[in-house]
Image 1: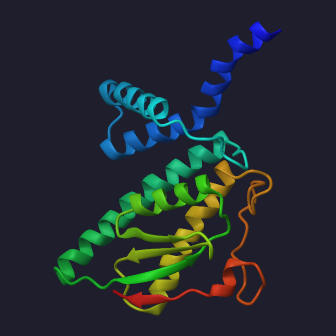
Image 2: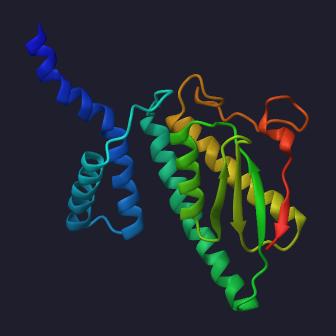
Image 3: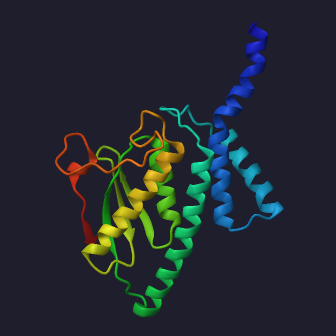
Length: 206
């Protein structure tokens, strides 16, 4: 029995690191913007090397992977990248080197490391938004966003980031996570104890 356990340990470790390997591979493909054989194979090799060289402890709570929601998440990401890139390009043509921008405070539903990281990565990958700071204690992201023409656009940018988090929760969220049961989940209302909404949200001109 001990020999069987010893043989199964490498397979168990590989299975535990598989989600991280797939996530790194997906990021590699997105960053290169290509699905050629060279990029696909090199992405798997680089991801495997990173996972082997820097093994991470088990993620708690254990995330769930929902393939259909993952497909939808990647589709939304590609759409957001295309739309945001065109908006940022138009803003640059109209306003040159002084585009209208703001720092937006975004309350989060989850404080799990993997989910916060995934939300931050999705936000940063979208042109026009960049995560500047993560406040784990307050469950807040501070996002540099452009273009932001006024307070109503600040609310739109905040909603976009929260919508990205809801997609992450639907895709990877454990059952114990708010929104991890496949339901979108709504942000906390201001004034509710223990909810991120009590911090409110603000946009600050950068």
